[in-house]
Image (cartoon, rainbow, N blue to C red; front, top):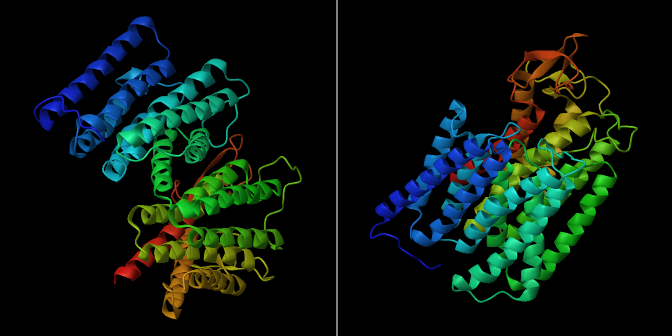
Length: 499
């Protein structure tokens, strides 16, 4: 990528860079106050101004040191000014948002990962973060009708369409210009078409499924990882990749139709599966497919499971994006690490995380088959089926079977990497991580008391139901416990590999 030094030393260039950013932010604050600009509009203006500067940073700095320092500096500055209520043109919105914290944090992450590894991926990610995202917000605010919410932040069809079209246009221009500028051969039109469509879809999914501005970090990370992995994808993988894209979309669409997944869960699972396939191929996605299909079957036939909603439009009982990420978040991170560093040992950590998720899910579902009530893993008192921290003989056997089955599938897929010793270790890790899940569920998982009935529940009640925290840590709900479970599996797997 071309280097255009502005001043004789990087330090002087960095000082000029910072002065220019703060000067423009000050001007934006003054203009916003003088003309009474709406909070959302002033924030979008700052979003674009800063985006231009960080896009240019790849051309005026040779090394990532000063850009990293800049990003970390603004994480601290934005956090402080947001807390103190300063720089309202930058922070003020019509809703609670931490986007100004996520924005520089995302910059730090993509600079650290892709500055030298793939400048094209870095710059495409900045383009979408700096221009496509505020375009979607502006169009949605000005022309949006019939808002919808897939997670927390409301979106509109007009804003979503603007995000898709803006991402497609920016990625087309960016790839056509930046790839040759980086010294690489110009992309074929067939490759370019596939890249633009999929990148726009992934960026749009990241934008519409946001919470308090989290799209400021999910959009650039998704875009950078996608561009890097696609550029590294071997040519003989392209047909398999297209088959996976189409096949997984059909599978997840069927799951949504059968009410196994909420729309947000289906979109998240498709995006995660796409990135995992690009990172490792069939050996990496098939264990996830097996986990999802077999676990869904067990859920549907579980005699002690939740009653399915009578209203087919209801999302009750469906796995939403939080539940999908709780089980697949750590496997995705490990797969991304494999795509970046290509260490075969990461496959074992990946299987360990999935073995934990499978063990936990199978233990819960198979435990529902037992007629006698389960017992709390800590107090050993009888409890209601489905209570967090409850264990039973059938559930324990199901936990062991889930971990063993997932590890066996990995053994079958990668026999040159996994043997009997690895299978036993992965089974034990999955079982132990699921046990950790049960202990957390029995001790510190949050529970609520309904004020009108005094009933104790695990899920946060609806807004119109008065409740108080009865016990546990408020942030540690069932989804967080599941995330800790898969994280424990991954951590134990890595610990086992390095000892």
